Each structure stands twice: as C-alpha cells, then as structure tokens.
Image (cartoon, rainbow, N blue to C red):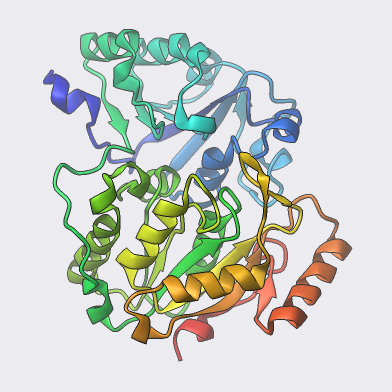
Length: 365
C-alpha cells in the first residue's frame, strides 16, 4: 500500500461499526480529575449519525454510556478491552475519543492500537501528534494494509482569507467562549438541531471532534497561521456551492481570552464573517484552562471584545444569546445563574442540554 495514502486515508464512516477508545478517561472517577479529557468521545456519542457499537475504557465503573453521560439515551455498552469488544461486536473502526493536554497520545495506547490493526480495524485519530509518527503503529498498519485517518492533517493547499463569506448574505452563526474546552461544540450542535426543524442547516467542522462526527472538515488549529482564517472561509464557500443551506453554524474553537488558543478564535471570527455570535460560558469555571494566573473574564468584557473583533466591522455583528454549561450544578443552582446572567446582559440565556430553548428566530426572521 502507498504509505502516503496510508497515513492520512479518509475513511467513509457510513456503514461502518465504530468503537470509541478512551483508555481510562471515560468513567466518573476519571472525570473528577480530567473532566475535559473524554470530550471527543462525548461529542461523538451525542451527535454522530453512524453506528457506534461500544466504548472501550479499562477503568470505567459502569456498563453503559448512558450511566456516565445522562443525556445520551442510546444503549451503548462499555468494554474493558478491545479484545472483549471485538468478540462481542462486529466493529471494524477504532476511533480515539480523548483530547489529552498537548494532543499527544498516551504511550500505553500503542500496543492496543497495534492489536487493533492486526485484527482488521482501521483507525481514526484526532491527536496533534499523528499516529504514523509512532514506528510500531505505522509499520503494523502498512504490513496489514490498514487505514489510518488523521483528522487533524489539513489539506495541502489553503487560501488566504479575504472576507468572501460576507458575500453569502445568509445567517452565519459562530459560537465563542469565555474559555477553551467549555462546550462550544455542544452548543453548536444543539443550535443546529433546533434550527434544522424548519431550515436546511450546515455545520462547519473546525476541530477533530466535529470532523469525526461529520466525516469531513478542517482542523483550523493545525493550519499554518496565514491560512487558518482561509480554511474556515474555504469550507463555507464550498458548502454554499454544494448544498446551498439556509443557515450556517460554525463550531467555535479556543477563546479570545486564552493565551494559547486566541489565535484560533480570531481566525474563526475573521474567516467566517459571522452575522451572529452565541457566547458559551461555564459558571463554575473560575480560572482560564491551563493558566491559573488568569481569571475567566467577565461576560460583558468578552462580548465587547468579540463584537469588536468581527470583520467587516460594518456587519455590526452582535452576541445574540448566551449558552451556559452548568455541569456540576444542581437544577436550582443552574436556574438561578441563568436568571442572573439573563438579567445582567439582557440576552436570552439557558443551558441547551438541561433547559433547551429554540433560538432559531434570533438568526432567521
């Protein structure tokens, strides 16, 4: 097999049987110390339309996914090992479902991935460090003619952004955050799900999780700096020609307030030329992720900064709603903070998972 095709061979996930591999990060105990690590698995389990037949996690205390993530109602089993999952399912794809700090795969994954390749699995990965950089994985895939789809690797040629998305003249809704890893993907999908009841919607996948869900997209944070905004613009313009949707929902990345991920957040704003912004905030988050020196900024400060960052400035784009992530709060606490933020900002505010509201009329009138 051509090794160039092998290391980044797109896999059509339709009609496949998928296992999501999380190491030891999916369980309730693991989430107490690493709450954001299984977010890729959570997003895929919530929103993917292909056939997920199991999660593989060596230390998970529960038997089914719904016992861990309460809003996921599908009866998807959790297996301790890939071997056990292989014996009890007809899976043929192993998808890595974690987002570790720095994007580097844990070394203890290697032998399990090698076993999967030797037993007729293809691999899907969203790691910053590609699987083909591990010689043992690469050689095993090559020897067994298996595919590895590295979803973070961008196309070879990308344009420089030029505000072409402005010319579409349709609602382009971008989720932004007060911090990174705060629930922008979830908010994007919940908003699109609401709007799709009446309109033809299109999600623009800008990170590895949404790329795995949708089966296409560009990981913006993996592009060279000059082409990050252009990659977003490219996706919107191509979908406009191919599908002509009524409304676009752009998955936000990073945060303008985050010292590490602000560049990606700016690229998304400049590349998409959004007509509407939805702010995502987690009330329990007090310090910027990975940077305890910085507090999570005030919501009004973030709103003002984001609105001033949009180009062209004459779009006069505004934050039109606030989507909260109230995970870890009681219903009473969540309702109280929702009411408080709604009063302080004058904007529609809710947790779209706990207390869903249809905001479609904010985007299309």
